[in-house]
Length: 217
Image 1 (cartoon, helix red, strand yellow):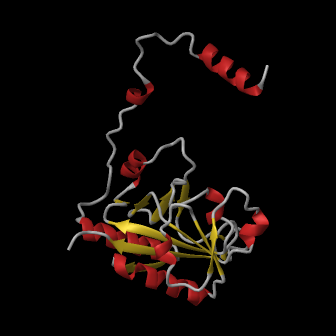
Image 2 (cartoon, one colour; image 1 turned 90 degrees about the vertical axis):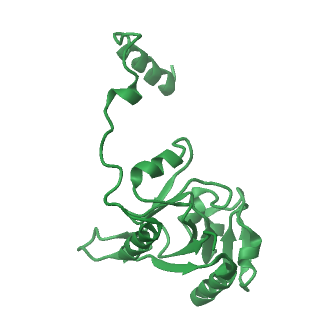
Image 3 (cartoon, helix red, strand yellow; image 1 turned 180 degrees about the vertical axis):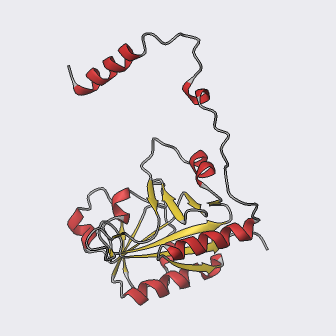
């Protein structure tokens, strides 16, 4: 018997005394907790996200869609990036203002290949204002989880206001729990040794978050 079969058998045995008409799990626990703190309009929510991202030492930028390629090119040049990784679903026009070589995200890329990449540019699935968190779900413009963990520099594009929510509960409603989710609050860091903060431990040393104002004029 495999480990999977053993676990499933134990689950079935544990449920043998549960009545067929028992309350489903989703409704068994009342979920009347506060969904967000305070009453904020759209601009206040975007501002809160920017403040909390900066609190976690991400570098936050705001721009209009037509200025996005120029800003990405500037950030890559500022880092001296020679190779930039791009997920398959990221519009290549966004990288039109950089001289860095664009590396396509491919399954064949090894950890050594990823280590030679200077920067990665992705979109996101949702951003949470109250926690200063961007969440990636391996969508076409985000790529596999590994591409945002190995390169030292991550540029993440957040479309405002459509991709921003106030708090965690509405974010969870947008996410598919069966997908590979990466929750990012600032650059990778640890203070485990002597309480000294060290960045770039198990992910990018620098995180640039671009809030792109996609709202109509």
